[in-house]
Length: 414
Ligand code: ATP
Ligand code: MG
Figure 1 (cartoon, rainbow, N blue to C red):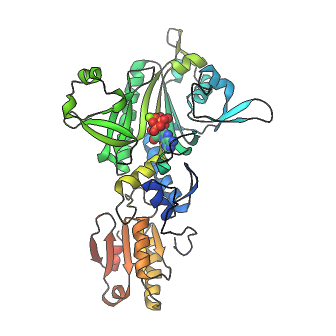
Figure 2 (tube, helix red, strand yellow):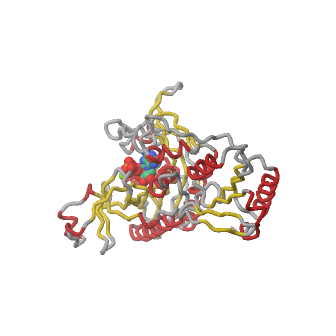
Figure 3 (cartoon, rainbow, N blue to C red):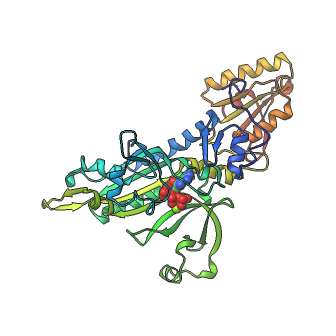
């Protein structure tokens, strides 16, 4: 894409009321637009990043047998009343609205209830199990805190997968597969080395849930890590009893701030019993289906990548999620030969299947470099007079700052 064509512009200042580094950088670089506190729009570059994150998650969910669907955002009050999760005293972050046709609806905060009800029409026998179904969908939550930028939205994208099994044992087996898939995702997103599987409160159905916590000063959670045992605990569950159970020494734990990028839950039969999701086993006996839920936040992940990998000059995208792999910059300064050379290289790069953003604007070199640092594409390819005179093209790695000179053919191998 030509940068002169891109409608989004970079800007020097983020909005005064934006406190989070992730949103400040993403707004300044033109990736997102702030609508109001905790509500953001994703502009073309931002959407490319988000789509890359979604693609990686989707691939890994399909690998473990996930079937993608998309459920409605508008939610039925009666359904949620049956599990006692409608009342504001039970769940305090619903956005609700009155319907002209009478009654109320809410904007989905999560989707255990509607999917369980859908499954009552599709699961009746042990032959119908197991089922793993997931979606990417905007969730709506009336969140209080708005200091974390896109990491805590009132409207945000979630990947939510739900598992349906015959027995607790089968459920546990899948739960372990889901954990592994999550770890592969964080590796592919470039934050694997900072992300810990962390025991957290499990609600009513099991002693613990597991959270995936990425260490960052911008995190809202506090975790305690035992490096030797490779264990991590959310502060909320760290009691003497838990320490004893895992044979962990309190003195050895390292306290860190961290961002919860995903979590996996045992749901037992809470929802299947409440909503009548049962199956007949081989003996013809009726049993409630055993469920699990597996959440992950693509928009929060995008913010986490910015928080943990950016530097003082701007964003640093890992190649897997970058909106473009290469930032091609022409420093023509009015020199037609340089412009033509850059134009041709741009066309050739596209022919070679390289995803490239071409800064073909007439701006000064300093401005172009500052913008390029802010945008954070992995490779910067610079075309100035030297590129033509001695055939050497400067290639800069955004993450390391390392500069190499390459021949034109080698640039096309990037
Ligand atoms: P938190 O503890 O941070 O409020 P949660 O425990 O309520 O999150 P879930 O309801 O399990 O989170 O949601 C699944 C995933 O969705 C989370 O792990 C996180 O990655 C993401 N997520 C949750 N709330 C938000 C939000 N307000 N904005 C962006 N992402 C979110
Ligand atoms: Mg949580």
